[in-house]
Image (cartoon, rainbow over all chains, first blue to last red; front, side, top):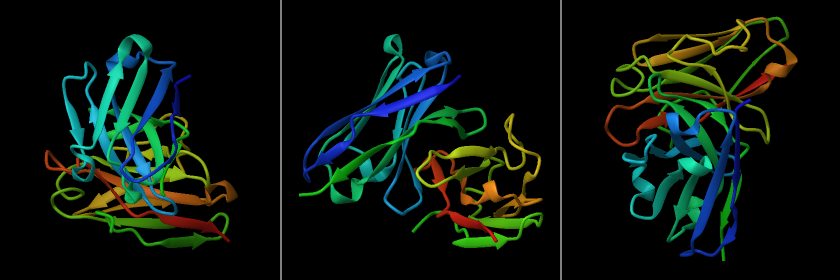
Length: 119
Length: 112
C-alpha cells in the first residue's frame, strides 16, 4: 500500500524557516517524480514544486522561487521542502504527492502538514 | 484567483446526475489532454478520480466520468450517492511555462 506521511509543520514567524519531510513507503520511491502541493485555509490547491527521480531537475511556482528548496533522499525514501523567508501567504496545509509524469497527475497524496506563518 | 474556473457549488439529489465544469485557456485545458479531477472530503487529502480527461484510476466507480470540449473540461457524477458530497478540483498541465500544473478553485458538491 502506498503511503506518504508528512511532518515538520508548525507555527513560524514571518521571515522564519521550516523544513517539511515526507516519508514514502509501499512503492519504489526512486522511480517517481515527487511534488509538493499546498492549500491555504478554506482555499483551493496550488502546485508548489516538483523534483525528478534522481533530483537532477526541480521546478517551482514563481511565488516560492528563491525561498523554497525541494530535495529528496532516495536511500531514506524521503522528500523534503526547505522553506525560508516565510510569509503570511505561505500559510497552508502542505501535501506531499506522487507525480505521474507520463499523465501529469498526482495519484497518491499524504495527509498534509499545516504551516502557519504568523507573529 | 485560480487559473482554472469552476463553479463554487453544485448539487443534486441521490440517484441524479450532476456535471461540474472547469474552464481554462488554450494554454492549459485546451492545449493538452492532461486534465485531472480530484475529490476532497473535509479534512482529508485529495483523491485522484479522473486523469487524462476521461480515464479512471483503479477503484474509482464508473459513476464518475470526464470529458473535454475546447477550453472546458467537465466531470459528471451519475447516480449520486451521499458519499459523493465533497469538494472537487480540476487540474491541467500548463506546458513548460510556470506554473507546471494549474488547479481550479474547487466546487462544493452537495447531495440534497
